[in-house]
Length: 242
Length: 108
Image 1 (cartoon, rainbow over the protein chains, first blue to last red):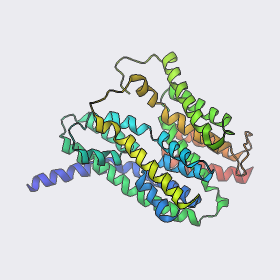
Image 2 (image 1 turned 90 degrees about the horizontal axis):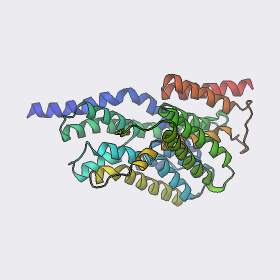
Image 3 (image 1 turned 90 degrees about the vertical axis):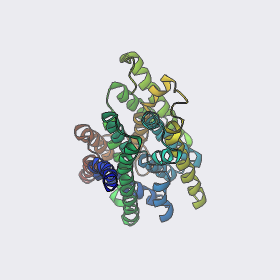
Image 4 (image 1 turned 180 degrees about the horizontal axis):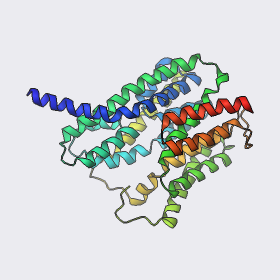
């Protein structure tokens, strides 16, 4: 039995080791989420609590930005969901590896699902198809909970630092910069570049529309452009599941 | 906005995000997604993030838009994109982009 306990701990540790190199990049991102919340006058409970409730950095920063621009509350919520639509894609992809997991464990996996945890877990599960369901679950928790702790700590740090820093530093410019850092590595082919170009340009053209309606319109145009580009320029390969 | 409204936004956004994350993990093999939908999902991050980035970069602190190259935000954003492209490293991109922004703001 002590051997079994030790093995289980090894699975956790393997997950923690996998996520470790990604933590330095999560830190400034989490700080930016806390800082953006502080800049739009969230109180401490909500400014830091949003990281536990939403736990999705890009959408949290966008939400703060929209609140700062006095967007309609419904528009802020919809924007968060639009940015987080990709989690449905991750969910579909991971579900193939998690069949048979209990409902509670599935909920925990879902709550902790992030870009990083998804990418690490999928790579590992694909590499080790022989892993038991429990082993996969422990590895996943090792990566995801570590990231959760760092995320919460960095949000709190950013919130308290951000509240004290003078506006003349222009720190709010860190928001679009952070989005650039997130977006660019995802531009893997000409179709995703087309989606980004059309989405960006349309957003500028549609910027005068009220209540950030332009963001939606632009995002839909960008998605359609990427889709059309892929259909016309890059014939999709049969059996390609990505 | 009132604190109540902010709580409403955060809770609704959190609940909705959780539903998106749980969606297919929970449904697993009961429902097959239409292929065009899966293909379209791939473009969501690029289209949405870019639509947030570009207006934020071009909008000056006073709310007007600037398309000129003496806008340090635009130049710094282009620089950050190149850094991100070359390094694929979030930390280097954020630090480099902010350093460029401060440097250009001081020069221009």
